[in-house]
Image (cartoon, rainbow, N blue to C red; front, side, top):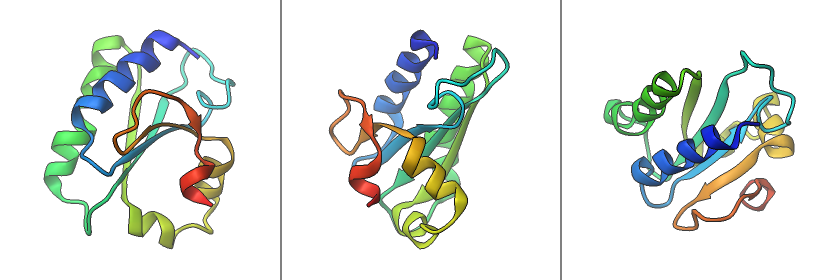
Length: 120
């Protein structure tokens, strides 16, 4: 995993994710199985009733734009916390729960941890 890219993603998330939000790295980058052409899967959970168009503009787009700047593919996915819990039995949720890395949780944005604390 390229720590320079990961650090830039974290820096961007610190600026754009609203209070109460969570962010996770998932996929091959989180499992340390990435190839040179692997994307950076970023799951973003927002503590709000509904995802709105401006969430894509204000939260997702800066990450995509960062990817263009770094010549990397950054792939953000947005869910509300409520929707995420509703899909808790899906393979995607289980994959993130088991192998994802939480790197932004509400106001605690300094330490990496496995994502199990908020998912269990």
